[in-house]
Image (cartoon, rainbow, N blue to C red):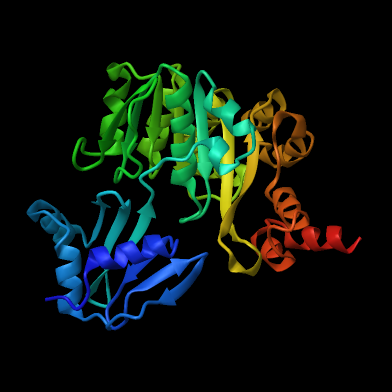
Length: 354
């Protein structure tokens, strides 16, 4: 019998407004609150505890998959409390898991206080929208907010491809079908091959993990659908270069041409600690594709995008360092937190020293 009850741990995570629960050998359960890890006042976990807690969540077929792959993603829900995205893994021959909270209520763009340009992005008729940032930066939350905005304001057919399904959407004005990789379809690539036959208006691809998924996601956007997806990149230029670099040199010019016509926006985000550690706030970089940016992508001059973003504020564009500076000047975060998350710290410091 495990020394701790998993539901009790997860309920405490919710009550303390944490984001993640870590279960690992030789340590008590650990939670992340406002970005900082904190050990819970619970017994140290051994292999028997971990196996009971983690394997207790899995169906027999999931246990087999974990044994074969040594990695496994799944979701878990405590009714009336929250859903959790779970990654199971092995380290030093012990099993472990990280469980991230997914609130049951999906907050809208306006409820989060995101910039108004997010509404315009969600209302685009077609094209590719990428939400990027490091792991744990809130990409899934941002996508859920945009899908919820569409759900409340438009009559659309939305299909999501996720691994695992995180936020549960309920039909409002739109109809939404959520397909989980490994349960409802074999892979992102397999689902994308057939998704256009399912008459969608909007497609959400949980993550562009490989060349095939990237190629098919871009093709889906080319065929007149609005497509959302994510990447683990830190700004718009790196996002574009990363996609192109995945492809063999012989295909790169073709991908540049496709991106230059289909890409509509890149939203990059990170979470920053509020002053005195009272929660976290999302900081954004927003690039909207203009004719100048499309030309820069097509002509292998992505470095020119930075200049276009600086002059594109009226369209809702903003660079990460500018957003962080605004948060600092508004008293939301302190200077050290802004400096730690900016993309160009030397320039950031010089601007404040002037």
